[in-house]
Image (cartoon, rainbow, N blue to C red; front, side, top):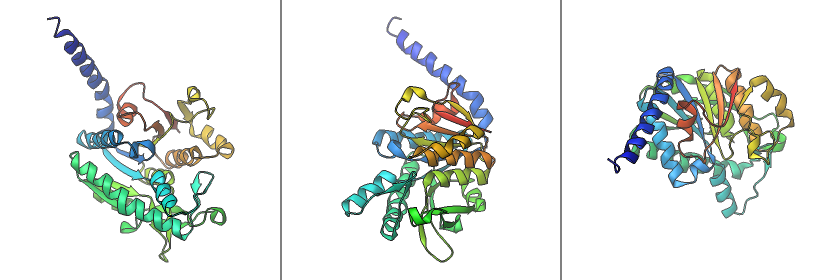
Length: 289
């Protein structure tokens, strides 16, 4: 009896976790969740497997997950190897012709296929897309193109493409696109996820990053803002810089476009996606209407 007690306690804890998750699974059944995948969660092997397991589980319990991914660290690594300068402006990668070519190669030719393969291996069929497939994204040069170069701003998302695919598969979207003249653009993955979530009227838009969430003090992880109204975020945006700015702007885009909420969570935490969706406490920052 003494030997079985620890196992019994562990089993009871597991059952309690399942019971806590049940109302959320019921609530979200049949709903669309857009997940921006990036940061440490894409670099660490254990986190990559945990992410794939989480997304496949969402599909199995009746949600419609749609993955939008970037690949900033990998793009930077290839640019460094080729001796190209890496520059950012207000959280966006400054992109000349060579940068766009490398970004497209990395995002579409390497990372997208790797994510699709991993999801397939974990038990759910996935389909890889870029903004060019089925003219998923209609893009134009970003308003500050004079500073960031060939960075595209998404003008329209063709939800018909996604709706057809998401019935049976998990769409995995690389943040790359071309305009009507065939000019390729680097598209910020946070913006792409926000636009997709808005166009679909997603239940949630979730952004995985390398910090706990939106911090009141960027140098103090204890200053986490766990919940914010979209108006508060809009008011704060002009004073923000760095990588958090496009993430919060994407949250605003998603919520103002019809998503019920947007979440910035720590992708360094294994199964952070499930913790945010299926537990009472959740983690990270939630932006609401």
